[in-house]
Length: 294
Image (cartoon, rainbow, N blue to C red; front, side, top):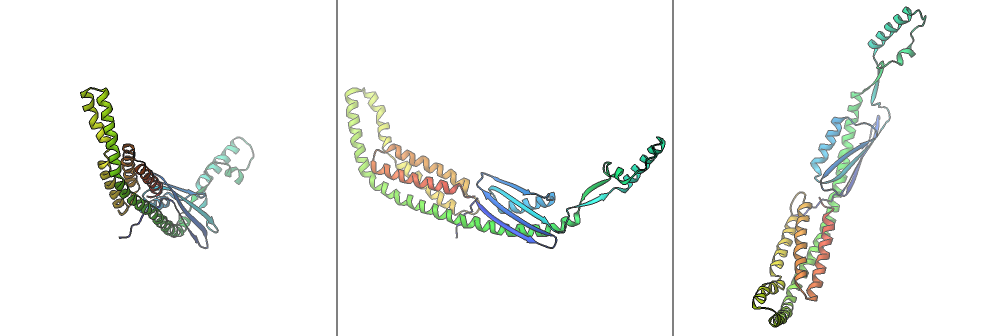
């Protein structure tokens, strides 16, 4: 089975142009622990369309900070209709005329008087024109998402190749540690012998007995090696899993770091210490790649 990782860093855009509008939709994303989606538009998008955009993206994307920019140039398509409230204007006219007569002002009520009064003229969203925006908007979204998802997979393959190269480097280093162990253990046994001889000269029998387990355990890295190899196999299996693997991989890397740090702390062998440093470098490079993976 082909392994497919998805990068959290990607970009895509879609453009649609009709007789009424020229529309550009851009999607970009960066690393984030969770899915955070923001829609930006200089012109107001109806809530039902915005909700539909969010739902369309959430189906395809699980993690990352995603920003959608929508630019709509309306050529022959006003988003609002200008509406006159004739009933209210007539009522205003009647009341103002009566007021003018009762005060003997001799003033004739004009249109300019009425236009200054609240709610005589107002803007009303044009549902008919909104419907003409919806089709090109979602065609542009479909194009943008297609390019965006292709880039996520393309970048994801690059991350995977880098991770696999690091895993291979670690797997090549582990047998070298195994090869150095006999010599390191012989050297450590000599150090234990010297330490015991010093204790025999200075300490009591009880003190010597209490120190022996600590001395023996310090040079033994067999358990750490087994656990490290187990975590490494788990990382390889995780990379082959479908769906988001970033968080799980980060946890496994923490365990790998813990085991290799313990191995490094337990050995006095220069050769093994050098290999431990190399492995830690590989793990850090994997961590940097995983930070970009969904």
